[in-house]
Length: 321
Image 1: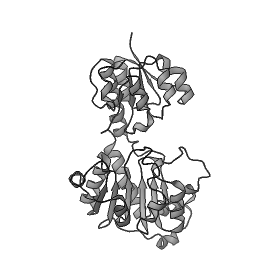
Image 2: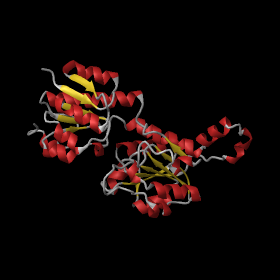
Image 3: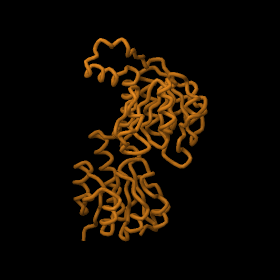
């Protein structure tokens, strides 16, 4: 009997076809926690594109592997999977280029007032164009909080493409490692004080919740820009909104929010100096193919009792159920 792979949301057709070669791959009829609980009992593997509650994992009595379509392990209760001996696989390299390009693209859009200019023209206000003076990125300073795969790629693009000074902060790396990844090491406070642009690339953990709060924002250079395409919980939305309204920050680009989708009444959405995208930085054809296919291959490896390429809890591999 072919194993059943349950998928929370549709994945790239190439990845779906690969799974179907060796398994019965099914997409949830109802992509919600309740819908997952209704179907999880029949699954040998779970491939997720949404946050998964611990009770769903515990209800999956046949589960042999849980796969993250992406990088953020905050979507999966890894501790529960580890307790139950279930490997958690993920795709750490799949979306690096796509997210880095989105970061740099929105930085350019902020610096050159692209979104404001577009709205102005559509509203018939062409004559007000002198009111949207932009700046060049060349020679500016970017501060990268979290110098992992994506942060290091952003550093390379900004340094080589725009001649920017690149600063880096990462509590998990020493100064030499940060320098090897193309950034000048700084403390978080020093980075915030020096950078014209600050971009966030850290995971969401209890320790990083509201890493950028009112105090941190007050320590940023006046007129700086903030980019967050990592996790919404990293930024205190109210503090960011206040700083944008007061003019302490010139603008922000956010691909992630504390509540997704956001309520229509969210004040941040009413501001003209903010670019908001719907958690779509990794939504390119190439990234979706890489994430889907990498996840699919590791799911199939585990189902064949082989070692997966990227496992978040490797200690369970010998004793996985």
